[in-house]
Image 1: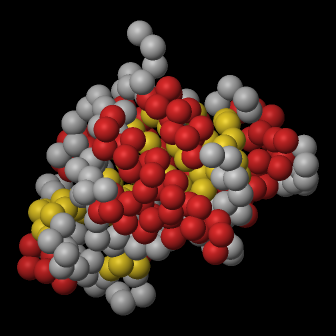
Image 2 (image 1 turned 90 degrees about the horizontal axis):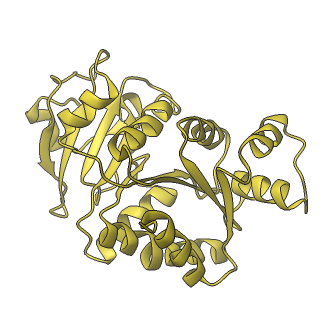
Amino acid sequence: MYKSSADTRVKSTFANGQTFHVLDLPNNLAYKDALFALGLKGPVPSAVIIGGASKMSPQSQSRLLQVFTQVLAPLAESLGITVFDGGTDAGVIHMMGQARHHIGGSFNLVGVVPRGKAQLPERLSTAGVGINSESGCQLEPHHTHFVLIPGDDWGSESKWLAEFASILAGPCPSLTLLINGGKISLVDLQLNLLTGRRAMVLAGSGRLADKIAKTIDGSDPTDDPTIQNLVNTYYPNYLSVFDLSSPLDGLTQQLQAYFTPAA
């Protein structure tokens, strides 16, 4: 059984020496209060990484590693961007954590995870945070913060992930990046767009990202009415596409311009 902690964060370390804070979120705590309890203060620019790496070709995975290590992590470090993602040690979340480690980054990397899906380091059991079953997913060990959201299913965290980034950013720039992804990622994308945050789709990463990109450029429009409505509603004002086959300097320039708008 999982034991709930009080509404204060617990500090611990992974086996690799990475220090992190974890908040076992009480059911009645509001978004802003949860960020405060976790020790995160804004306004600061924020980014949300959503998606996966399922059915991705080796070439796409290699390209994405370059995106994370050469573009996303360096920009987060240089511009002080707080990055939010799903927190578990798999897919693009794993890549984000590894990229932060690769560049020796110090930026905040925050995982938002359903409580019933998180397998926590055993040392946390002595700090008042319980351990769930072995069926849970291990946390990515280069994150700095984790929020455990009430719920046993993927998707329980979706609205929290979207709202945390918006509240922390306040008037600062905030952006969502969709990479690959499936059904849960579509819900994530919808909720992130509903906050008024812009989103970028990385075409060439597969699955949902490619369906959206091909619907936008007309090369192979999907017959999924949810995706069609999303594209019709948000493209081009709030939804953009970057093709992974393009030079990464272009992505760096786009993100740099977005996060550092001219005065």
